[in-house]
Image 1 (tube, rainbow, N blue to C red):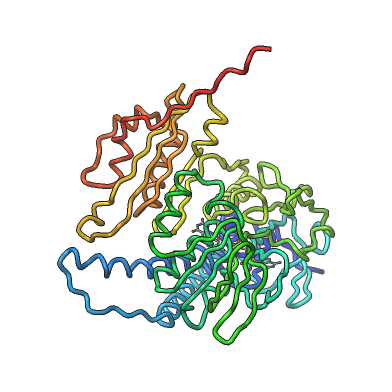
Image 2 (cartoon, rainbow, N blue to C red; image 1 turned 90 degrees about the horizontal axis):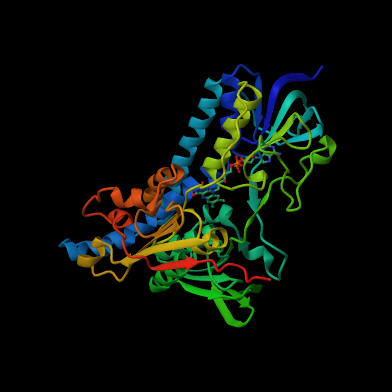
Length: 462
Ligand SMILES: Cc1cc2nc3c(=O)[nH]c(=O)nc-3n(C[C@H](O)[C@H](O)[C@H](O)COP(=O)(O)OP(=O)(O)OC[C@H]3O[C@@H](n4cnc5c(N)ncnc54)[C@H](O)[C@@H]3O)c2cc1C
């Protein structure tokens, strides 16, 4: 007789771990399978190691800026192997902590790939064992998508490999314009690599507010990152002095490493979804309803395997809501509106809500407040950099429907602006909030002059 559980979770990443722990706390007998490392993308090769590399890369500015404040810093030197070894130690510590939390919650952990054999059976490929489950949660996350094969494909690395390079590349070309591409461009630039960013569209960070996109691009270029837009990598050839990258509509670029950050796809291949009757949507992600339920009523899916918002806090929230819904007797929907997010580029970006263009499509009147200024620290340091902030306001109700920040600590600021926006704060509420002086964030509550006011013209009478 196969072993039976109340819940089988496939994938011990952000969403799966949370769902397994909460379901077990609700009294369910839970088993979780992981084919790689406990913690998933975020902990092992995503948010956490990335932020550690971001922090490392920012010391370069600190050393430089210190001089303006009277410090003499002897020639600093950087060791990539030390950084990577220390990062790996921290990731191993976190993996152990995640494992301990699951064990403490009495969740059975299996280190194996798991695939669906039929609607109620999961097969562990490491042992061939079959497990019967009353409920199944697919939390398999996503994987880098490198696009169609090109000549020299074998030379391309993704973010997965970037975390384990044996040495810091002197020259790197990164293809992609999303947040992972710009973050890695900033990391390598800060650590001293010569960076070329190649993106097929006309500007980086598609989907973000246009002012933020232009501001970030300008700041990255000021730091020496070469940004080539409206071009793609057509082929890569190994030459004596590195890798020669052929670009469309642009001269060749010779580098030591080529990284593609060209998007991520849901991890659903070979998962046995057809055997279980689980349907995909038109984008190839697992189709779910507002309770994360798939086309098979006792099979659920959360996180990056579905087409919602591919961020760790969202996957965690979805996992928690699933466990409360199915095992806690508390049907819970996740609110995917107004999710604040940060891009850990240099400078950092923090955004929530609508862009100016989106607001203009949605509202009859839109007021824009924006400012650009030199952060205080840059003054004595003599650094040529500016910070940018923008509020997008529904001109009829006065509600702040979008906030966009680019500059130091933008991620920290947007987390708190997020509370105000979630509470439907108006521009008058922002104005009534006393400034904290001297900070950069005070600009958010002291912008008085409208930079623009868009009024939708009534459709012409027939
Ligand atoms: C470079 C990078 C940087 C990122 N930075 C941020 C950030 O700053 N902030 C943020 O919020 N998000 C960030 N993300 C996104 C974030 O990591 C994901 O949104 C989040 O991890 C999704 O969680 P998940 O539970 O859906 O899946 P994952 O965390 O991806 O976990 C899925 C797990 O399932 C396992 N698995 C897959 N198939 C099987 C199978 N058949 N059997 C057993 N196990 C299986 C995988 O090995 C993996 O461990 C980043 C991602 C990347 C790649």
